[in-house]
Length: 478
Image (cartoon, rainbow, N blue to C red; front, side):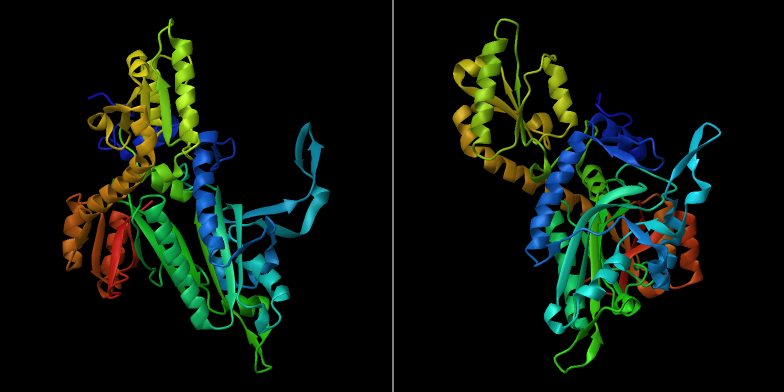
């Protein structure tokens, strides 16, 4: 069968993904190496994702703030383990002025900064500096802060939404009086992320703690959410970190306790980024384009008038009225009254993943009916119903799509999680081309033989099994 996206997922998953981004008009590579320009349709998806998560973050008692893009290099030197983790990815600002030299603008040799700045790769250091001033006594704790910003990590092998030098995210930074409170908070945010991804993105997560080899630089514990892509590879969708007292001691985040003693606070940090969009697209989409859960679809319903020259005005007007009725119910709707051919309109919105497609021709207008098709199920779901039934049931239909998309991924994931009893069994599975996550006793990965398998098959430890930390999941990853 002919598909809108070529090659198909089965033929070349990586190329399919790149072509999917183009076909759905989501983003393009920017003139700046490793960066992307997110186009209006892609940004509309991010806004819906961001706004819903922001509500959940604020419900945790967190306040949004805004911190500088540029961070003094000496801040990184205060936390040695942290700076070592980001040193190879840091973009450095060294000059504050340009000058025309030999007919071209260049950094002015006389305008070199006394101290370079780092474009933020993450903000633990500069927020830690602020907290050292804002936290004075136990009454100031807990302090819970979040910011929605762009960050820069110089990426050598960029891929749209998955790995770009500049990306967008939220980063939360909390401070507490005790380690118990901080660790409980890191775990709680981990669960908030998991619930959000299940309920909003329709993606189940493998949730667990990172092994010491994989944890965030400067953290005592890192809790991760791993998603399984359709090609079996892992994608880390979000993390929550228990930072212990590393940053509070480095930056002097101290408070006067109820006993009159000066004590260091305990801090956490947590974040998700536009990488979640890559997970969303890879998890649900098919060979005809994007498939979006209704919760994050810019348009949950698209109405397509099937017009001829003689009835175009009447059909368009009829469709617009139906669109307004749907909007009054709180549904995000697009009525496509453009002069494109009807098949071209349909393929446009199929590729963009609109959950529910509504077609109205002359017969439907006369009979007060519509033809509806679910994007996640395709032609098999096509049926004709009355306008009244659409208006009555549209919310239930969208809720059903959201539910079914989640359950479809749950069932697919079951086929891609494998228990292996030994390294030889793991290698046998990998060498035969088996895909997915492999669950093995962690102690079996603590040796040179496993290191060799990591190098040979490009696998890594994704996280410990949350239900039994003797076991770890390993997989290839993005």
